[in-house]
Amino acid sequence: MDAVNLVKRLLGDISDERSRQLAKWGPQRHPPTILTLPTADRIDEQVCDGMERAAKADCDRATEHKRLTWWHILNEELAEFNNARTDADRRQELIQLTAVCFAALEDLDSRPTATEDSSR
Image 1 (cartoon, rainbow, N blue to C red):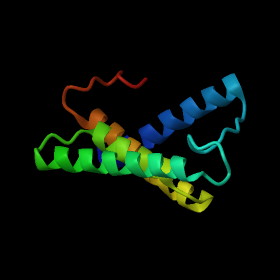
Image 2 (cartoon, one colour):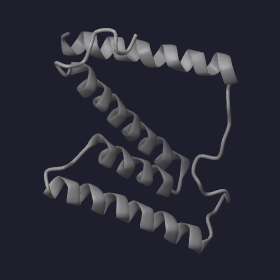
Image 3 (cartoon, rainbow, N blue to C red):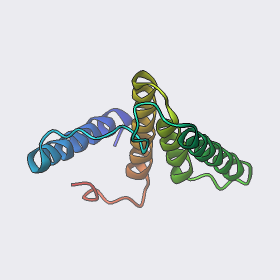
Image 4 (cartoon, rainbow, N blue to C red):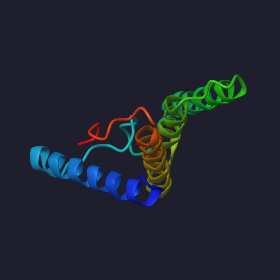
């Protein structure tokens, strides 16, 4: 399957899943991060900073040792989202996280061992 058609199929799959989620749970509102206070206290900030640093270091080590996986990249993006301080920054991190998820799906679906019916 060419790249353009793969992207179209993936967007359709994601749209279908999102429709199923809305049908099952309806629109939802949750706190955007593990921080529950509008302004995180210093301890929460230190924990989130530490999580982000650890995720970045883990990703760097995996890259250095040629063992990088989608999990490493997704974990780093998720830690960056969790550590974002404003809604605008959180939105940007979610865009990046979603793009990485999409790239992982493209990679998975483009592998020669993937079966045509694996996603449908």
